[in-house]
Amino acid sequence: MKSAVIIALCLFGILSHTMAVDYKFYLASGKTPKGFLSVPANQIYSEGGYGYDLGTLPKDGKPFFFSVDVPEGNYQVKVVLGSKDAESNTTVKAESRRLMLKNIRTKKGQFLTHEFAVNIRNTRISETESVKIKPREMGKLIWDNKLTLEFNGDNPSVQSIEIKAADNLVTLFLAGNSTVVDEANEPWCGWGQAFPLFFTSKVAIANYAESGEAANTFVSSNRFAKLLTKIKKGDYLFIEFGHNDQKQKGEGKGPYTSYKSDLKYLVDEARAKGANPVLVTSMHRRNFDENGKVINTHGEYPNAVRLLAKEENVPLIDLNNMSKELYEAWGVEGSKKAFVHYPAGTFPDQDKALEDNTHFNPYGGYQIARCIIKGIIEANLPIQEYIKKEYRNYDPSHPDAFETFHIPLTPFSSTVKPDGN
Image 1 (cartoon, rainbow, N blue to C red):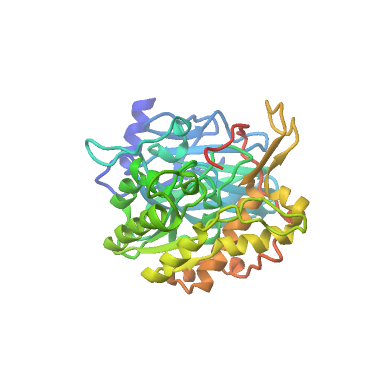
Image 2 (cartoon, rainbow, N blue to C red; image 1 turned 120 degrees about the vertical axis):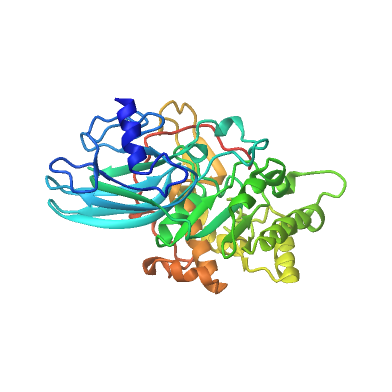
């Protein structure tokens, strides 16, 4: 059976690194359209092939995962959502919970087509070098050689999936820490994993951020070296560090010395590749005074970013200022709904309350991502032309109400806090 699958995939160009990946899967029952490969509802993914993954199958209206092996690169994905038998409400995530589509409702017999871009990468840099990933990253979907899609919601329904290699896309790379990272498990969420939702299929988001990283460790772990092998002329590099950099002590360490120099190195190397660097100031931690005003816990580090942006003529997104406005709009208690604050027993094996004032849940990560979108537009960056119209207007002083926000939870959770604070 496996050899037959591999032969079929080769015919579709899936396993060949010399052939452009361009294939079509039909997941629904009934007659398979010409040019599509039928996927039985019980077909389980195995290495070198395709199928339903992570112990799930498309049944009983529950969330399920679909994976297919592909070479690293950018892919345009087209999905047809809906069912001939029932209403559906489908949210689509890719890799480690990257939000692609949210709450797409269809009536019985109705089908809607949507497209988005997915970036795939592995750890390999050259014959002798690889990214130095952490133990917590082992087995994460962002570092493997397959494209994984999560279909979630109230009776998630998918008729077909088309995946095509797309080397001509603009790629927006993210360099950052745990506030940016693609978190694999609920309830943690970096703003970078909400980011793809806001762009058309002409832009791929390549999130290289990782928990606990500072600007210099992002380099020493070879994450930046890997990024530089992929970034090209016309791409973007958004840089947001500070939370962990400010903890580094010793001679020469400080906001206007080591930190500013480390950021300048990232900027210079991106420009040498013909890419467009963008500096992002750190968002605040959730820390209020007795009057409900945000307390700055970052010292001079945001100012160092502003100074570097001015000196080197680098576009700046001042997330530090926007997050202050956002948190104060929420208030002391309301802001807890955006961070990982949950009583014991909310998630499986959670025997203690979670009270984290640095790391966001999906609602918080989504609102921070909307601040970044606002910053892109205010900075008049050319990539703004690819922002979806419905997400172009946002005011941090009037964030989306928590009660109106819903993204179905991925069926994997963890009480282990991300690295850094």
